Amino acid sequence: MIWARIGFHFISGETGQANALITQSGSDLGPVAVKVDRVQDHAGTIFENCQFMSGFEIGPDNKGPIKLTTCGFWGKAGAGSQMVLGGKGTVTLTATHFHKWDQEGQGKACIQALDGSLILNGCEFMGEGIAAPHLLLGEELQSAVILGNRFTHGKMRIENNSQGDVQILGNVEQ
Image (tube, rainbow, N blue to C red):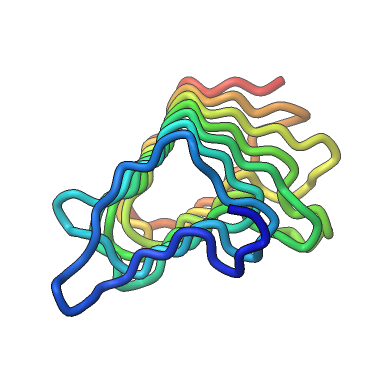
């Protein structure tokens, strides 16, 4: 998809919530690449080998898991954060790379994990000249595992406001 206002949109309907496995796809140059209002609590949605050039938003009503594996995010002017994660579900990011978020210099973290849980492993953050944090862990975030990631162009920048169990280990800075 290109130029769509919302690329992929997951909602709760009369028959319940959706689940999906999306592979080798993407959503570029719109304001929102993916918007999750609600997915199935037990099945959720999986993105594999997908590309996104705009925001990925998970709303406060979501309880289901969202998983991204071998995906890529590229920032565009005006995009700010590449992911804003709400809801009570778990977001798992594996072998995914993030490039050039917060191009306007507003201080917006690449990933804002505001609620639920986050598992981040084997990912790479690339953003030469970006001073904004890589991660913002919100007060309502229940837990996070940040393991074995690569942070280029300076120090790993994580703003941790969570009162939950947050484990940060085995990451490298270059």
